[in-house]
Image (cartoon, rainbow, N blue to C red; front, top):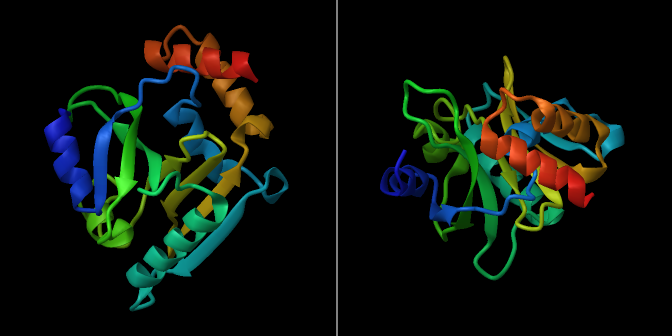
Length: 190
């Protein structure tokens, strides 16, 4: 996916694309996705909403923003953060990278963002991973059978499940080269 298509797709969510993050010593996107498997002992905090609620999208947007703000996802005056994106075309294997983004004044993560395919599979059906630019906060949006939610895991470098997954990425010769390098350098700086 080229930068223009990515920028247009993210604009539907009210997210301004600022480029692909090229910092190699960053937790790989694929490892951040597993935050949904972390437990409360890892510092995980959840907000879960009933998918059948008529106001689920607006409530989920408010919940996402509240959790993102409280947890420290946003950096700087422009509310900057990293968003996991897939740069592959529809017929190739996933190419997961962090996009540098900022939140615009008018945004709709759970509605327009999820419907556009970049942040989910339809209105009120989120599937995304975000990380603070400092790497200290991972935030996930996800859909369950009859609920949707957002969750945050602080300090992913202290979470054994995430570190173990990063170690598998770093040592697997079949891992994407960029992911293998990122995982290796991220683990090395711990």
